[in-house]
Length: 333
Image 1 (tube, rainbow, N blue to C red):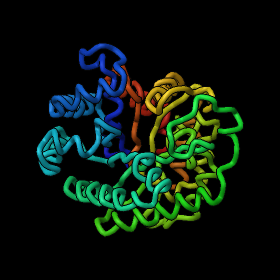
Image 2 (image 1 turned 90 degrees about the vertical axis):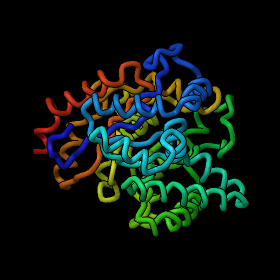
Image 3 (image 1 turned 135 degrees about the vertical axis):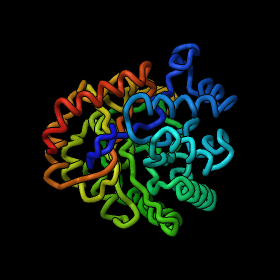
Image 4 (image 1 turned 120 degrees about the horizontal axis):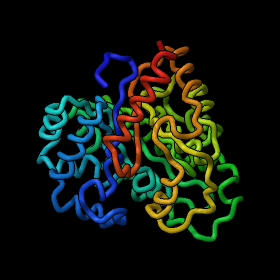
């Protein structure tokens, strides 16, 4: 969307994760999809970057595996070569996703794994420096009694509605502050992604975590779809925390889905969650009020139009951009 606007649109590479888009069997389980990518990662990364360019967005955000920075290095041989591939298409790397469950959650459960997390985030920060980006969009860790273990299929509504204990938030924040100190020397900051059903998705939880972390290095990436799915109000989150937001995920949603209804491993649960997500303008998120908040706070930054596993990613990204131009752009002025 090369219009010179202060709000610039990008997309997360997870938008291109639907196997049928690549001529493969539709709706491949994640493990099989990842295996296909890892057999020829450059083919898939080239295709994802081409599709992002053709959709009209200006930037890309790296995704969970197999769309992350480590696979990008494997695909192109180096961070510099990946940066060239992005630039050759007239794109910018906006940010790079990092899983919270894998590194922070595991370190919270076992302090002996803190060194593993430190090493991973230092490598991630060095990669970002090489490609000219400065934000790690950071996944959170699950809420409820499950901790960081695999979800239990006997969950009750109370398991997901119960408040997160203060000591859990404090422990989480301690790890965020420690890891932020690892990446800060590289000029890199965290932006916590508001994963549905995590300990940093609801406004009260977000407020607690942000109060316990360094605002210079730990920021927020609100995902409107995930917040809505978890029963929250994304507009309220945006209004409360606009001063801590460098990037945001513009995902729509048709309404809440109780976390206790999900079954299977995290990938299987994500597949169920996808049924409630929608392209920009096709759900219940109040995007007009969202824009008024951005306007009133003179906000500028990256709007990541994320459409997980879209069967027609170029078409749907363009539809979202058309909705923005038609309905929202004039509000910001």
